[in-house]
Length: 498
Image 1 (spheres, rainbow, N blue to C red):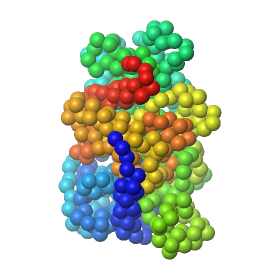
Image 2: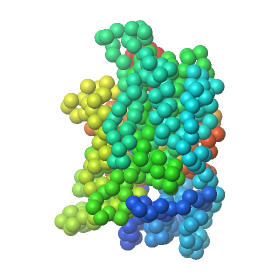
Image 3: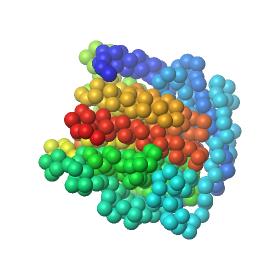
Image 4: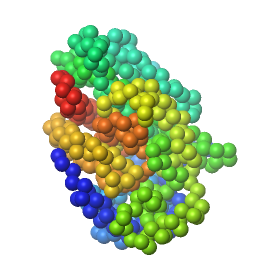
């Protein structure tokens, strides 16, 4: 599919004008419904309410965002493509929402916050029946961090010739970050030393509450090791690829989302002496166009937050003058209590630093890149979107945009063929909002991995982050087909049969 740069630029200009009108608001530090504090332990809540606001115009949308920030509401999703909407979650313990907000058109649904099995369980891997993908009971429920690690260990025990456990480092709370390298020897796959395997990285969620992304990473690992005769097996891909799968890159936050706060977002790193809040948004902490602000992501589209190199030659001269004047002013300090707190420097989060070092080990970055990794898929939820770079800027296309989108459109169609799930496609910035310091931009621009994608899994807002466990296997199946399509497309582009 050919990408028309002029069309994309026109769309970005319209977006800029629209959002400039929307966010001409006084800034109020954005937070969550639970202020993400170190010593605050909210009581478990059985359910909450997810409201989708569908503003009729930019004034309504501006009012939703202003009220959400003023009252520290937990914004789950903002969609800027198609019919704009804002999803806001309220736990039962929250005070009544302001009447001005409730007067704006919206729908509401109850969200269960029930933990599948609140306490530690006696794990018996033999009961999971991992020798079979189709008959395994493992993918019928979500699993705590300890069980996720046990799953990795069990796959390595069952498939010692194919699974290597990768130790990436330790988290802020001292947990070990584990990944898997799943491969088939070159001799067994018929490849020669002159034709090394391609690398394919699948990363689980950096945000703790996105449980279905972790369960999907585990399903994909299992599918790669399943007998090729089994339905949904991905084993044939190992003829060409070495897969690197990191199911839970935020173990501290993930475990906290089980024990304390189901919808915790960040990692669990203490950000400074005397800080009342804890945690860094890992997906704002990568060292590519990182910004030291913790404003709500949509505020990055504000004229006052634009970089000089974001301005085009035909941009308003007064806007450029205002920006130059703004650069001389002291930047507003980041709010550590914000969901989107990016840290006070890039790679401050232990987990982000570990992931970056691991990427350097298997692929290299910059001039030292070995080029071993051909594809990267960052699993996320929710929204049913398949996204390309960039995240930090909406009016700049990657030089590989045409090839990236051609592969992505085919992958979306393939994913839909499994269970009818519709996936929107586009650049991450266009589908969501402008957000610097994103892993996708780092992987593409710094590590030079051409086929770098973010995959936002089910759903579109009925359950949000509280996907029911009966959806684990269907989501895994359709994501497996998406990965299979991308892998075959890339191999074909390189003239490698799969």
